[in-house]
Image 1: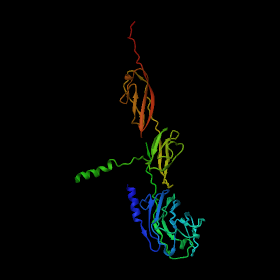
Image 2: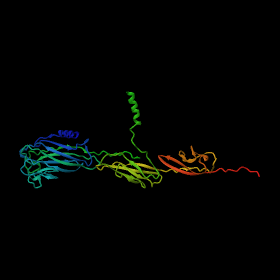
Image 3: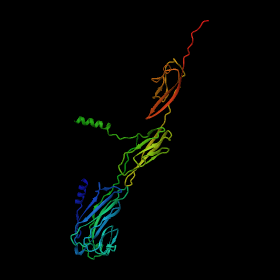
Image 4: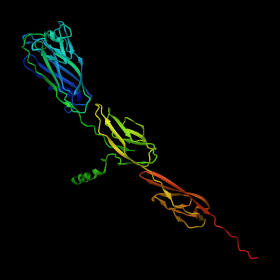
Length: 198
Length: 188
């Protein structure tokens, strides 16, 4: 019960809203961090939702870019967003995407919309928001095995095809990284008690 | 009420708050084969790396927080850092080592020889080194050997000495001879 309350609180506290095209965003981290830390080797599931998106000047939603601190050993895609436009294309996990739109930008890892399904989400348009869509993805993050309090930053940036795809409009070019978590690895030293002899 | 609290605070250091510890160095009886060493468990996912100085041998529990050690081949004396352990957590972090010096204790008691006695001889105080142990055997009464109680024959006396929980023994034999019995003087 307590776990669900914590998750609910995190969810409630994590609603953010930015201007321009990107609407409110929510997320859950499971399990929740303890004291701003995760333990070495711990596996954490991030589920992230973009609740709304305004297609200013026909900028479609292109994808989610993840910025992870050095304390994360790996990120494993779990659940991609649903294809909102429904007119072709698919959401794909990409380690790196380079835009065709200028200025040429390289982002990733993250989930990106590949309209032409050619393995390159950067050379086409994004997901057309035809029906007040929301987009949710989940990834699994693994904390590095280390004894130093390395940073475990998680930032998610939602972007349009005018900045990460091939669309020429700059109406949605402003990016607003959303900090999901900015803690560290729990590097509390292991302290052994004294040896006893029976 | 205030007085009660004061008494309780006074008692706290004496009751219930002491951690089980072993004096360093740890005393091990000579030729002991089954010593158990342990550290408090840190929980699931931790492994423990024990090191025991040869000729000590880990006989059980490697990797856990409790091991069995056979010291039977170790010579008497101090073994510096005889037992050492580190713990490694699920994330790969390792603790600093915790060590314990080991002292292999051996005592060889000796009994000062007595006798032989005549059957009617008075009791003799038994002496052994180191002092402080107990004598047992036929004819032994309160630390004395009494030939008259023992009777004629060869008797074994055992001396048992205990130190730091280790028990050592020594034995000796005592001969009690019969008192010659003369026939009455005859006058021819």
